[in-house]
Image (tube, rainbow, N blue to C red; front, side, top):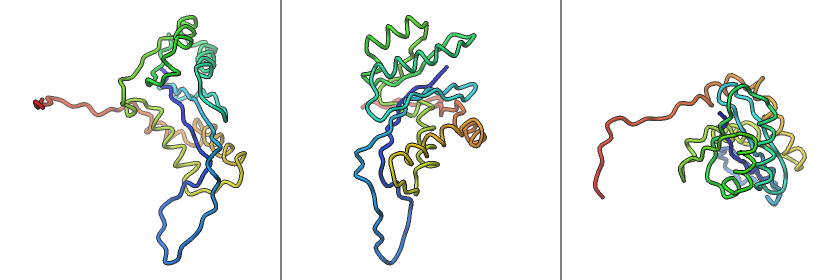
Length: 178
């Protein structure tokens, strides 16, 4: 099972918390450069398969990711958990998934907390971008790629706890009439 979502990292200042007596000016870029990462995280092995660009994530990008997932030649059937983005629900993606024998499982609307990869994107922002200035777009992109490349090695202990499929379950919920 793979959890899939895109992260759109924008080159800019990711400030931490600071209190000071004097005003401090921080140089920042215009925020017009984006680094898009469409990722699929395996819930068992914590392996990340990704497609990156600095343009847009489209249906063809999703199909490219599905082809990469099929190329892994896993012994078990592949199920991909997706949100309801328009470029993921289109006919091209569904036909590609059917041809590659990949099952698409769509999450309910407005439920990003059910997608485990959202935790990964928050971790990447905290680890690679928060309170770290980047002088150029290449340096910015390199910091994100380095963090993602180090997931199975340097960040493995954090990934095991962060990406554990633990969800809050409510028992005996009382229903109120509106």
